[in-house]
Amino acid sequence: PALAVTQTRAPAPKNTPKKEYGEVRSALGSGTTIEGKLTFDSPVRIDGTLKGEITSSSLLIVGEQAVVEARVQVGSLVVHGQVTGRVDAAEFVEIKEGGSLTADISTGRLIIEEG
Image (cartoon, rainbow, N blue to C red):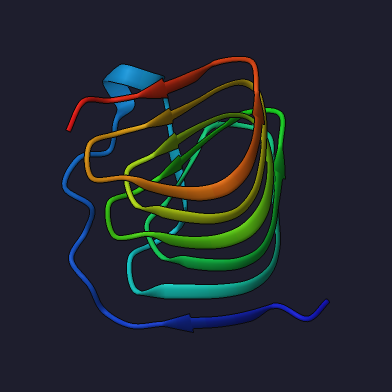
């Protein structure tokens, strides 16, 4: 499928969780929209909007301002923002305070932060 990218200026994310999750690359900055398929092999943080598919054996972090409408197949998923679709996470899915996950979920462990 074709990849459509739109970018607008927005503030940088407040907290990139390098200490908690190791080195994390930003694949999609705040104010950016992608429709298509995202594949990666090391921890990635999304702060923009993605519609489509996400595939990885690694960690995906969905930032506070992020909106993901996708088929997500990853090693682990941490949700600070909004995720809608289907989620398959081999290790765990963690929903942080303020995060929203509306999906069919298949995972080894589900963690929901209080709040």
